[in-house]
Image (spheres, helix red, strand yellow):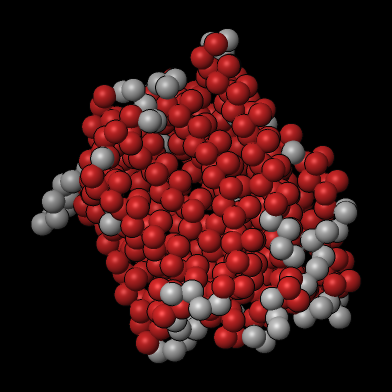
Length: 451
C-alpha cells in the first residue's frame, strides 16, 4: 500500500535529480542566448534556429528512451533484470543510428538544413557554421541520454543528474571562454557555443564509460545491440515505442513549425520567441521531471500487479500537476522583469518578448497537466497510442494551420500569431481528461512478454 505522503516522497526522490538535470540542460541554452545577445541579435537568432535540429533529434532519442522506460521500468519493478538490460541494448541500437544520421547530415549539408527554417541569408550562413561545428554532439548525445534514462529506471537518477550537471557547468564555462575569447582562448563567437557543446558531450561520454567500468549501472550487451536475439521483446519494444515516436515527430514537428513561422516573421520575432521558449523550458523542468518520475513509479507499481494502487496514485499525480503548473506560471511572471533587464534585444524584439513571457506563463499550466498525463501516466501502462493521436491532431489540424494562416494569409501582428501558437495545450485537455477516466492505462504489460 502507498499512502499519499509516502507516494510523493518517492516521487520527489526520483523527480528532484531528473528535474535538476532538465534545468541544468536548459541553463546551457540560456547561457548561449545571454552570451550571444552581447555579440549581436543575428547570432542569437541563428543559434536559436540551428538549435531546432537538436530539438528534432531529441524527438527521436526521447521516443526511444520513453520506450525504454515503458518496458524496462515494469521489468525492473518485477525483478527481471536481464530482460531490462536487453531492452537497454535494443534502445541503444536505434539511438546511435539516429545520432549518426544527424551527425552526418549537419556535417555535410548544414546550410540547406538552415534554409528550412529561414530565408535570411545572414542567419543561414551563421547557423550553417554552427551546425557543422556541433555535428559530432548528436551521436554522443544518443549514447549518453539512453544511459541516463536507464540510470533513472534502475534507481541511479542522482548519478545521471551529477554527470549531466557537471557537463552543464563545463559547457557554460566553455561558452564564456570560446564565444568571447578571453586570455589565450580564441574568440569564436557562435562557433564557440557549438564547440563548447561538443566538448561537454565528450565529457558526458567519458563519465558514462567510467560508470560502466565501475559497474554502477547495468551493462550494455553489445551482442544484443548488434543482433536481436529476442524477437518477441523487440516486437514489444516497437509496439510501445512506435506510437511514441509518431507522437513525438508529430508534436515536435508542430513545435518546430512554430519556429519556422516565427523565423519567417523576422529577426525580432525569432529572437523574442527564442528567449521566451528558453525561460519556459527552464521553468518547465519540474513538470518534465514529474512526468518522467510518474512514469517510473506507476510502471513499477503496474509491473508488480498493484493496479488499484496505481489508479489512485494517478489521480494524486494529476491534481498535483495542476497546482505545479499554476506555481510555474507565477514564477515566469515574477522572472519577466529580470529577463527583460538582462537580455539585450532591439526595442521591437524587447516589446514582443514582454508579451510572449505572459503567454508562456499561462501556457505552462496546460503543459504541466498534459505532460504528466500523456508523458507519464499513460505510457506507464503501455498506453502510448492516445498521445500520438491527440498531439498530432491538435497541432497539425488546428494550431499549425491557424498559425500559418495568421502569419502568411491574414497577416496578423506577430503577437497575435504567437498567441495562436500557445493554444495547443488547452485545445486537447478535454480529450485527455475523457481518455484518462477510462483507465485503459491501468495494466501490467509484462504479462504479454513473460513466458
